[in-house]
Amino acid sequence: MTDRREFIAQVCVGCTTLLAGNAMAADAPMLAETDAQAKALGYVADATKADKVKFPKFAAGQTCTNCALYQGKAGAASGPCPLFAGKQVTAKGWCSAYAKKA
Figure 1 (cartoon, helix red, strand yellow):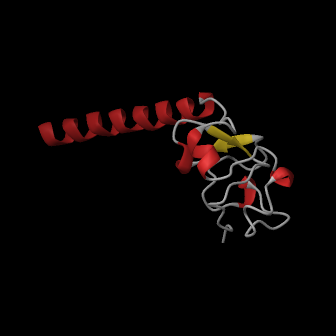
Figure 2 (figure 1 turned 90 degrees about the horizontal axis):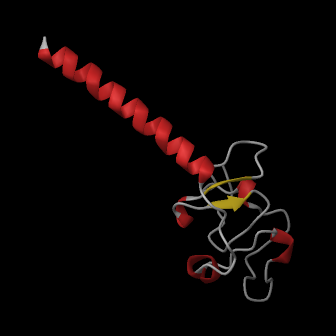
């Protein structure tokens, strides 16, 4: 009997943790272009302002929205990216780690 009760308790804790994590991601601050990690990856909040000389791999149409790393919801103005833990990036942003969504 204790195994069943322990399992149910663990499921409840796991669900609560997931819900709290999603709420925290939604409340996360926006990534500043002046952030050290952002600078290192050439992040810009507006992809049209990407430095095409410094980052020749950039191509028109590349944005966080269509990047495989972007975890924002469809249609959202911003969302989390695992490269910038605890911060949100703009959907229309770009960085040099861009990887086209499959």
